[in-house]
Image (cartoon, rainbow, N blue to C red; front, side, top):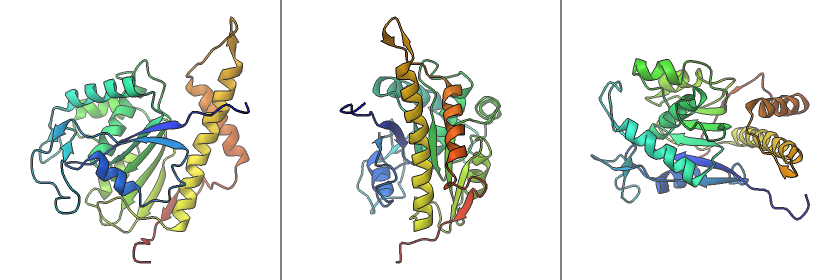
Length: 269
């Protein structure tokens, strides 16, 4: 309706191990600003102060934080349940949120929350998340977690950045398999938020535009569904999926049959 300001979709952005929300915000700022121009991005700090040396010391100022701690095999975790409880409370009180963006530990944690929500373990009263941007993410390796979080394909629109020189390359590929129809973007760099060339920028712009289109369609449908003279808002995944299916059929610009592309680092340009 004219004169009505549309509410932006909201993304919770979780930083990597022993860094900070401010650092992740700076990392994402090297991407074309038009990609997330229609979204509200929230960059909180991890709940625990860094328990050791940070890889960004001398590159970006402290303080540094971590979300939880883990052993060298990434099979045992300390303070993970406390972290999950904290984030669920944060999402409930600061949200609602529409999805996650995460780097490394933040991406791994985001995927866990998405899987848990899909299985009804957390965020039961929160609307289903719609999107996920994973940069160098991985799965948890504890079988008791895997059996729940990755039990079924996670039906959230996701894009996964995988670096050729990233020490988490294989785990990142494995994480992508946990999602339904993931978009995979490969880049020649290591464990970092990569710079994007024009092709990747266009692909991400198309990806976000598709999500916004689906979300706006659902919002219009919900507004027109009335009950006792009041707008009846429902968070039904089926409505979102149907709207997206229609849009995908109409929108040939996004090539869903060719989901992988190589990203050439434009940093030296």
